[in-house]
Length: 231
Image (tube, rainbow, N blue to C red; front, top):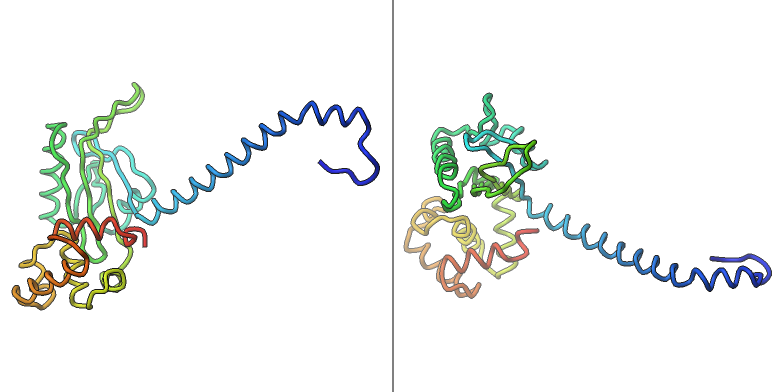
């Protein structure tokens, strides 16, 4: 409240004194709301950088709903799509069989363990299917399965550079660390990277020493809990 000339009249002074407690409460609420707004904005950006999406399926594997990222992945010419009958399907026949088997198992047994599927490696895209356990109102069908999609917009070369910087790895070590963090075994990763299995084992020991990991499970946890997930 401001004035440009003269003092406030006595009646105005009395009014200001009367409304001061309410103004203090309103300003306190305003500051708290601004703080929450900023917190929400930072959290939204962190989630956006994680690049996760979701979709829900009924017991037959039909797509019921999806968030914007999930809908974008279904609409693009990627590894998964919505079939004409509404079911979630995969373009690759082998992946399609895995997807159908996973959906069937989870739809039959709500206590079944979640199923993870690698949909693409370059760029990386994976899918986690879990039983929903959700209860909806009478106007909407309850989903049987929730699918969490995760996409990595960075190329493998970029990720290797980031790993090398974060853990002080040599380029060859970073490439192997990335492969191991994505679920490949040493014997699977070695031929893809042009290494012998023995060389890959030697590199893995260096990787574990530099990262402090006690094994592949530790390495996966270190990498996926590092800032790389939101880089």
